Image 1 (cartoon, rainbow, N blue to C red):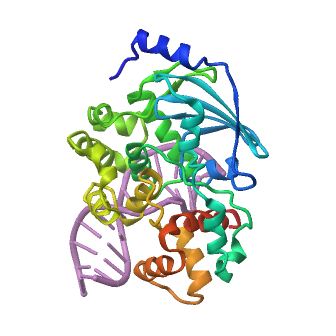
Image 2: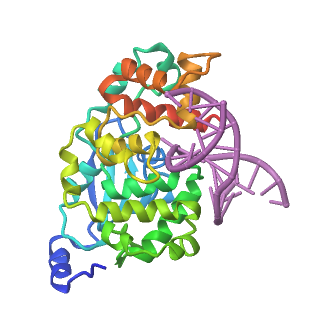
Image 3: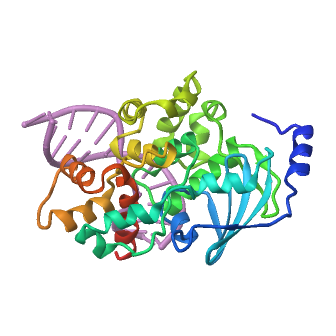
Length: 303
DNA sequence: CTCCAGGCATGAG
DNA sequence: CTCATGCATGGA
């Protein structure tokens, strides 16, 4: 397990003092922190108040609070020196023109009926391995329970971080998780029957010499690789593509999105997943994953 | 207390 | 190929 070296921590302190909040100007009226963090794409953010969160991202603890078009951010501890503004900008994908994407979707009258006028949801740029394990755990599970299982995984197999929000832990590396015993995964983390999947995926990825190079693979190839993993079906693979590899054309179809697509485009029918995928690709194209997030959020909230 | 969840692997037809 | 079934667990 990785241990922070004192010298590196000292460098981090000098470059990025813990208590130096920054104000970042964000795209006007095209981002909603709360909606984005509560949209089911991430599991490790803790809500402090309305529009105010803290969480562990990679090896750093972040505090974020949205006030209109400003984002107040703070580095709350961590292992690596970072340029906070750049880090936040990349993580929340503020370079993406989500208003333009949404505007195009809204030409579809059915979609426009269930989507907001202003962009609110961004697709976060999360670590692939964290997304992979998180969505293997997500299968046939509740979101609150997914969150608690992940926190237990991090506490057991991640590295501790000193924070002003209490104890926090990084998401485990493939190598650390590959060492986990099945018995511990089940009894201490509460993984249930998914214990074998998590261990298998961790060991497979730890043994992948070129996991880092997967980001270069074409989406179709990457999807094939993911589907070979234990406990990874089409839905989980598409979640990893979308949330972990930022392949915005990926369109994960879960129970909510299935209901949404059926109600909007196949009323009274029972379409196959293939048909729904084709329909999404046709209507939403290269940014189908963004549309998927709006559909998921809308249909989950009205149920 | 019971119910059921951002599905998946497996086996039968 | 399509479809039914079992699945561990704990939050609601």
